[in-house]
Image (cartoon, rainbow, N blue to C red):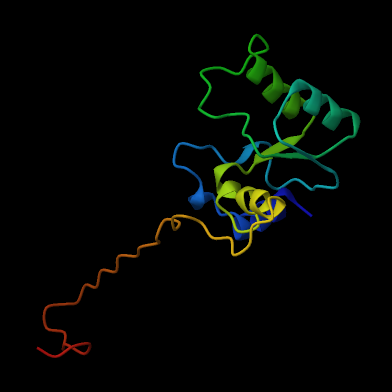
Length: 150
């Protein structure tokens, strides 16, 4: 299995387009084409989680909360986030995060919490974004109108 396979599974379950527009979900660190044999799952990315992934020789960390919420201005050892990114890269450990897209997924975080509370007939209060498609048809000037009558 490759990281792209894991990404594909998440895209089917909790598509990235459903995430809050200011959220950063998906592959944050690593090569999507690398093979995966060990995955570590965590709520957050911390130095302890990265150390555990290194000790257990994990190829991928899957988290709920992203490490990179906004683009960093630098990736250096002097910064806590930068240090974690460098450690992940040096040990070839990829990082994938499913945050608000997983909150909005059927069977995701919101559904799991509702089930734990014993709720039934679980539905979202508001619908997900509607997918709109704009079609534009261009015909040469003298094309017969095959699709409609005037």
